[in-house]
Picture 1: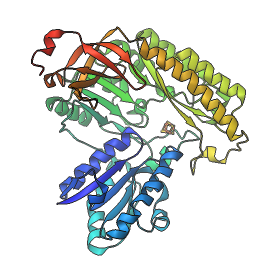
Picture 2 (picture 1 turned 60 degrees about the horizontal axis):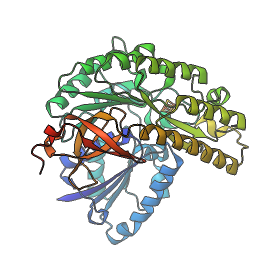
Picture 3 (picture 1 turned 90 degrees about the horizontal axis):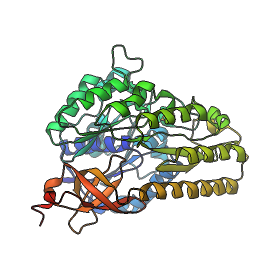
Picture 4 (picture 1 turned 180 degrees about the horizontal axis):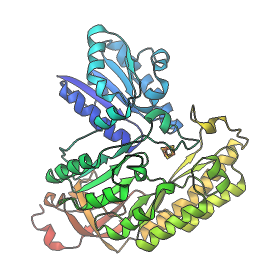
Length: 447
Ligand code: SF4
């Protein structure tokens, strides 16, 4: 049987796309391998949102060159956002590459592979599809061997934030029909899934512009009513589309987890305007204030960009002020880098790299201290944890997550997988926590 090796870069959308790629490859007789050297097909599913991710792809392709030289029949392909961005040029830039497929062309993979295999031709497909075809081809998967699943509810983005490449490589927004989403979630629940994360580039603009479609808040209410589903999460949210109706869901829906990823990007109104974000720091803080009022224990995480073109010390201080006021549980911090085609790439940028780096380090120090205090404050507390499986830590440990999406490792029997159990957090580390089961009856049967 032929074997494939698939590497995934970037965000959750890419994780879902990689699942789709894997399912297609398995339908045409490939099986997965963890060893690139054994593979007949190596695919990289790429992300171009961050400059670093793109450079990583080029580096990885270089690493596979000797394999291709030793075994010319090996097929090497690149999909995802970098492939979409580079298109056919990628084949000229990387002579040992056989296949380039864009974000709207995953369904064509079997046909493209056949062409490469039979005709030994190098092929590419990066055309955008029309709205109707995209709606028809939404990733669907109702089987599952895990307790948690991502469910794609929308794709693409119409916002054109000035620094972001997503609208150019993923296309415009399309929402998946709500009836189809609910049916998939029902089937997932029947197959043992207990937690769903609704994903899309900008989930809270779900349904906008589609006549008769539910709003995102209404969709959440329908998901909350699905028997067997015990937890709901969603990502990513744009602050400007975070309606009162949606915020109020955090106070109303018993299954909605008390965590929200709400990208701030900058705390300076001047920079937010240059970023085309559509909100001010004051608007953002008003959203946060309402969230904390309807759901007092909610924890927020965020994305922050340091060193956007023209950022002054005063702009940066405004970002620090919001960070200190909101007290994010965690933040994904990035040093700005221009992305091709975007409006920000044309802006003059006169802040020295060293100044940007120094700001970045200051921000990180402040955020790390807040994160540390937040997660340490859990120690001694007892929290419901949805058990997802055996922990990589070994030693008979299970792992699960709290409502705040924090991984907790603790000792317990396999029978607890898929259940929500009370766990006392005993220590907290940078990326996870250690705990112990509180209800000792649940330990019966533990080897
Ligand atoms: S909302 Fe802005 S940052 Fe997010 S995907 Fe759309 S354009 Fe990019």
